[in-house]
Image (cartoon, rainbow, N blue to C red; front, side):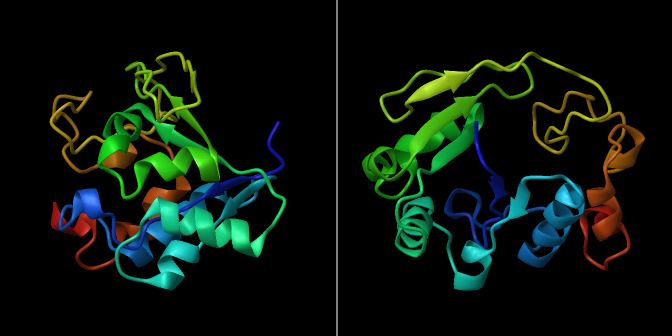
Length: 171
């Protein structure tokens, strides 16, 4: 198993330029709230601290230099795995970490040459399953609009709910 699981919010995700629903600071606050009190869950802030566009290949190089001898595993969802060929220096990712793709919301991750292995995750649709409800494939068919707490129970939604310009404030 893994000794810890690091959640790594991006400062600026190049494949989502201008399409983030929350600021980098809000994303960090949401992740921190979501993992608070969970043993082995850690927020990795290197991409936020570096600023600008976040490239996973740069982050993995930084982590390996900072923590020599540590074996890193990069967990990505099926959607990210599909886009791996678009990532900066995609071929180098396999050299820097074991790349593991997992299913998302019942959509299987595709096997690609950039992925070492795939993990099947059963499709679960309950209030603790987080999916992107603001995407065209909204599993709720727009029934809840931007009121995520009607479906999802998570401390992370409380973090930005009251912030001006947040997803909640934009509704």
